[in-house]
Image 1 (cartoon, helix red, strand yellow):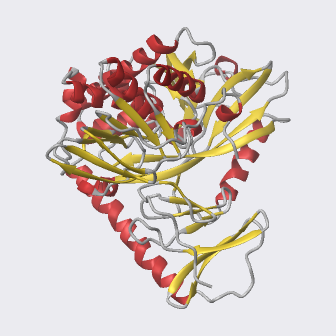
Image 2 (cartoon, one colour; image 1 turned 45 degrees about the vertical axis):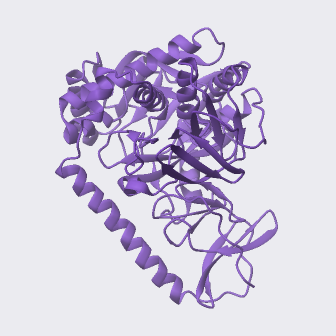
Image 3 (cartoon, one colour; image 1 turned 180 degrees about the vertical axis):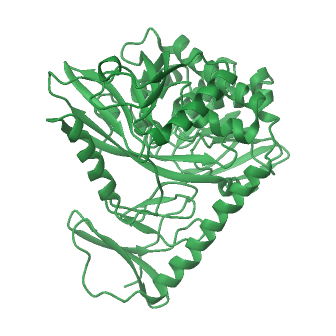
Length: 502
């Protein structure tokens, strides 16, 4: 499992040194949000350091589908319903600002940005009303979309029929890791350290600044920016307003005579399909994304991956899987990204999250928004987004999301309490949680090695479940994920699963 972007990007060196002393701003997370905000602040003359738990682009940015588009499935419809037209226009303005920033920074860098049209479509008559609602929301936001009714296969370059679609020219697709490699090169060349393999574990705020605790010791700063996807600090209970999900992505080498989609495509059908294509060394590569599934709640994730393969091969005979990967996303109950001050931190800790599968535009928009707050440079669109307050619909979704979390917490503990103790080791690639004594134990076998770790998530005590496609332990509560040996991969958890007692 390795993303196409990681396979085709230049090597980005790690830096295993200790966190630097004396930085004004520490940025946690070396994905697109973190490196963009570090770039903006450094250019304004601030002393900045970046710490990354794994490697640069290891999590969300390195596993995205890489679309920089204003046409975003049904996102605009949902924002309009929850927040109204004024906030909708501010959201679109923030995404336009992100597109402009990327164009300014990278249009002269080969292989980073390619202009494409964007298409949102449905293959079913049942999906037409959703297309119409998104068309209306796009018009309200001032986006010049074109509505298509039963376009021909030749017009859109796809091998299947489409009932209705929206089309928008002048959008972009990115090679996200080439972009990160260039940002990292510029930052390090400007004296900004990017320390890798250094996980933030806590932060304490006082009248003079922030003490950042990490797996490599403490560092003091004036301001901390959490650009980590999930927020690893529980202040303000921000994690309780986010709904985590995962999606599979597969890259296929196509036959030379195969047609490719005329643009970047995303369906509103169930399951959803995301499509883009690239040329690597004369080989046409089709990248397909699956619909999202709640993290830690799918019984057999490998079935979802197999279904995507079957769909691809049914429409592109001879397509050969080159590689596959998965990405995690977080949707805010307000349907708007959060980019601002973390509650109860005295204005010293900022966080960015809730991109709802549109991390390329929203990462840059959030970086611009947070840097503007730190530098006291406020864009009108940022002020409008900051001024939005949750309505009854948002509160209702938060209650529903946390009720679901609570039901999983109770049900999984009950199920584990009655699970039989198994004497045999799991088969290769399999895992299960059983009770040993009073404790849930997560047992798995990967690459011939059987491991037993605590089955209790170190964040809020959820019972982890086995992800058989990725061979990981995933928590169904707030999306924390762990490797088979218990190491933290992502999510609000910052501590590993401890080895189980024999």
